[in-house]
Image: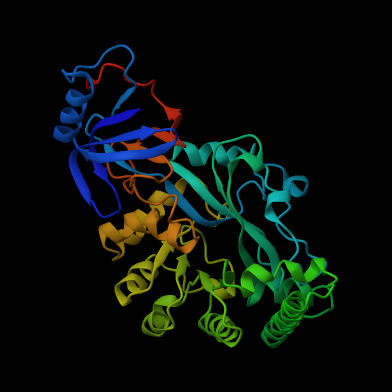
Length: 406
């Protein structure tokens, strides 16, 4: 399939290609270039360059052709819409430390939010447990179209959810048990990491000596985190919680993402020096808790200008998944540079989620996850013309086989 006549925002080394084209083969991006180069390629292939009835061509009609949008943090399909408790599997609120839980066992890809995501040009999402527990469990990165979760997985586990601050305090102090303070949250996480690190060392030693080793289901899930194959995904809003998460990550030499990071704009230089990425949001919501009193769309821009790698999140269903490109637009309105706004919903979340080798930019060899818009997706009146996942049109008009603009 060829996509032609588009303003191609590659979000990669080729930058923006005016009057560009993209070729897709076997579910992957095969080529990206100008319409002139595409026409030359066509002439080499068939002698004339003319299209015939066997050609599969999408005419972007001058619209924006971009990598599919990526949501870096949400609970889509794990907190289902319109289903109450029966469809809410986000938090196992009886044990504050549950690292062995796997989001893949609770994500319902038939949730209506998946269809909303596809209609908004969102082709992948990082989905996992909520923030009621100190350790909530394992996130997964999935594509947004498919009936069976196993068929749309990109990376699982993709991160280990941990939470600081108000949510674990409220949940467990209400049950009359720990944690009821920030000290206890940090202490419980440290103890868990200490035990996991000791377990891993014992397992490595046994392997080196050829000894039998009894694996512990509760500890095995930490090994990808300790190996720095996946990050701790830290729910942090306030400055003090952000610094506590960084302190513990450094103590145990772990990778970390700062999710929400609502007061990050107050400590932008310190966060840039620390070097951990921030997933900012949800800002399109009310300040309904003490720890989110300083939520503002300006945070993403201040952090990006300081040198922090920034992605933007809706935290669906806290704000709706389809509002993700508009949230990026609001951040741009509040000071985030335009290009950084586009990066915050494409290549940056791909890097933060550890899947930049497969998605986030239009480059040969990457998954053909592509969104075609009538204009800038961060503007409210822009329409999604096509959404393409793994080279298949999953939303939009019928393919234009003539190559003519309509």
